[in-house]
Image (cartoon, rainbow, N blue to C red; front, side, top):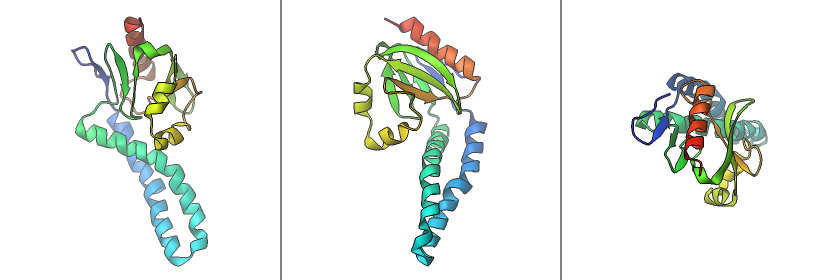
Length: 171
């Protein structure tokens, strides 16, 4: 975990993890696109299987590509200041004052879960595409989650850093 010296803390991406997922995802995202194009040219009835793979793999690969681009341009995965928490991978930010509780959820992937005081403002800022795909990872309507699978460092250390910041700035 990289922590800067000013009042903004950052958590960077784990480059090896992101690059391996990026390379691993190519056959599961690029191959269905090729099959989809080939299927439409040959026979329209076999389009369903590549289309399903494309939809499932597309969301996964979109996030990996976004993380890959962030690594190239040097943008951290997570930033937090005394005022807010910014998740650059998922594209949202939360004011510390809008959060009731922070917890760690280890399931299919490690998530930092933010239980919100009021979720209307957060979800009204999201576009329809984000709302649709974020439902795959959402815990419930009163929380929002950050997948820390791609973060550099141990999950418990990353969570403790976020939790400590929350406790220190909590009104």
